Length: 317
Ligand code: CUA
Image (tube, rainbow, N blue to C red; front, side, top):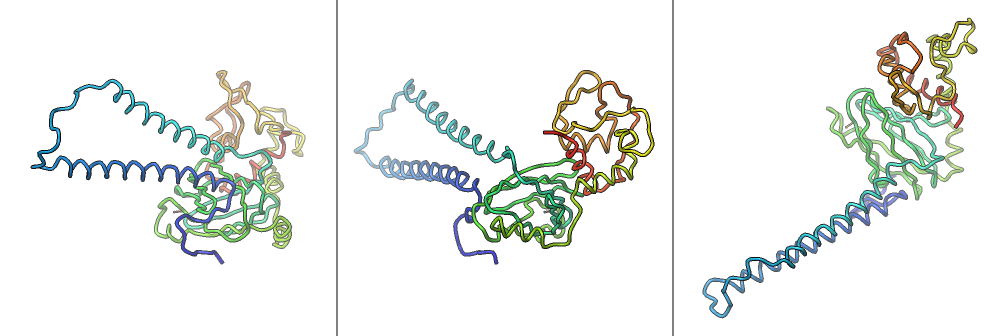
């Protein structure tokens, strides 16, 4: 069961959470400090300079003070720079997935969360993860914009149709934690909830092995690759028939720089591969012709993930 006892902030259950909370408390402290300071001065001066009080000095003050002007620029600048640098540092650690993270695929749709583990095991609305291991979520939506939000991990990221978004977390305590959709996505948005179950690594391994055996995404992707006859052109060695190479070979593409027609280069990440499957004409590899047919509308998100997983498996890191 999820522990929903009263607390001011959700419990801290990821490596990211304490840092986020500390910044939050700093901002809150600043706001309280200045609110109290200004409110106190307002009350104090209102009383001191009330009408009829003749014992105060009412001669006009100086109309210009260089020192005061410097101070009221320098102090807010200093404070906002502290907030900026601190926030940016947290942002970067929150967005940059550490090397060696375990990748979980997420497909969101109205109104459910679909997860797939590296070994192929699938689940819906519940995600089991091991304790103390960085988990990378690669997420896409089948329809509208959703947003994955795990308050206890201080992780929230929009999940978009048409493009992969990623986020990561490392759980620091076992238990079950709320998962919400944080973007209004239609009638049952408020019921697009679930939970993250954090297990000891050994328990996670046992859990992983316990389900129906599912196909590893890269293996499913390889079959799809052959069924769609991609292999005939992109990987003549793999196909039964021998065709001259008219298409860029796919070995070692993922994660590498690709030179495009016109001299531009792109890094072949998942979004590049996805675009090249759906809109092959968008980025033509240098030295090739735009002859590939589009697969837009013929593949669902899960199949695209499988194809990309297969292409990733062809890359040597
Ligand atoms: Cu999905 Cu709100």
